[in-house]
Length: 309
Length: 258
Figure 1 (tube, each protein chain N blue to C red):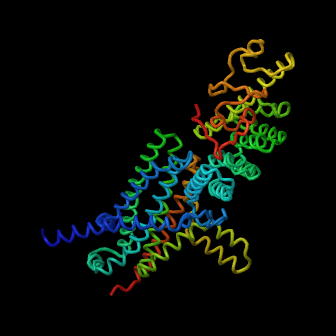
Figure 2: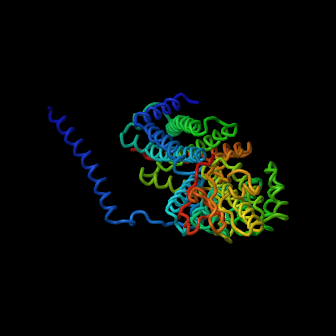
Figure 3: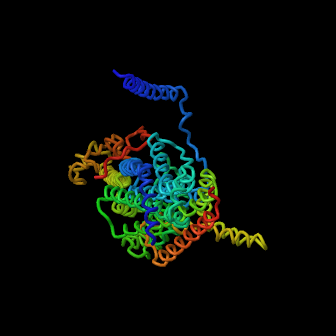
């Protein structure tokens, strides 16, 4: 082997070995200094300052901050976190850098509004975000829908929800349901049907799989709540007639109060407890249910969402 | 146009290619393909926006770096290598040398931008699967980026005609940053009084206005660019570049090359 070829070969080997060694050593150092490498911190929290230093390339910076917000929420949500301190500032920076970034308002409000662990539990910040989005994109009906949705679902402020839907219904090309929902709010705000209508619109108006899965899970939960309500009413009717509780759903069928074996939206039969309550068999697969939970059931920290059909 | 200017321009272009300036296209291609593939996995619903924002920002910044670092060496390198004396000993006027150098680098940047634009559109096609009519506005954003390059190339040439390459680079980059704040500077001038107001206003109008030439965010959201803006930006950039180039010619004409 010529001298130069030998040097090339040795240098190449040394290069590769050193490169691999530094990676291995860094991994070892990370293990020794757990948590010190990835700190949740916003070095610059002022959207105005960031906009200035972006030198006109704010669009790209907004994309970076939006990705950061998604990653932040995703990792926290995955771990069932109860606190999301940086989420609201990250979303505010994103939307100030690019006020036309609709995706940040639509999904961001969904991240911010629900109570932990489903979201950050900051409905007021979510409303501020949606209102800022509307000010900058007054012709986007989805933002009015989002605003009304938060008022309805998180704050139970039906008048504010009706107002948001009514404002949105006046926007060109608005979803026709907005007008309907504004009217619905006035008369049947607390009904399961109203909630079902809202989640159905959410399901139909998004292309994102996670949002669809969330909406589908809520629709299934509403169905369970309604089923349990109806079935327990039938149990009470039976007890009123006979003075005792039914042993199973077959007893209700025999009394002509029920046709067929009732099943939850996933196809699992409901179970009738000896004290006359109706419960689901697999509550983990039916997150967000308010009724029908087996006695002593503790929901998981992070709800398990099924694929969105 | 004088054939001498064309020769100097084509030589400048060839020299830039020989200096492997177009190698930046490889980095750009890697950046675009990486972004197109990765962003969909780590973010939500912004694949198209990222390809446009990242693509056009990279076109702009890569070109800017080339314009500054090649522009500042156009004159000084010729002096250092003493090739300038060979050129000027022929029937070539000094202003022709400056204009030829400017056109050569501008040509290099246009070729570079066109190659990158093809990359941006290819990445866009990859993430969107089809083009939309509004994607045509990207061409306007690219055109504005080229106009920025004309201004910065002329400025780099102006500085390199009287200063060292290092200082020229600092001046040109500083002017680019200040130019991005030109509108704020005018706002600041409006808040002052007396002579400060005159000075601030004068400075605000003297520095190049790059913010009007940046429409990346709006075209990313498929918003149209008005015809008036295209016309005024074109006129502004050409006139500003001509002004800086005239300055470079004036300095270079009087420069003692002995």
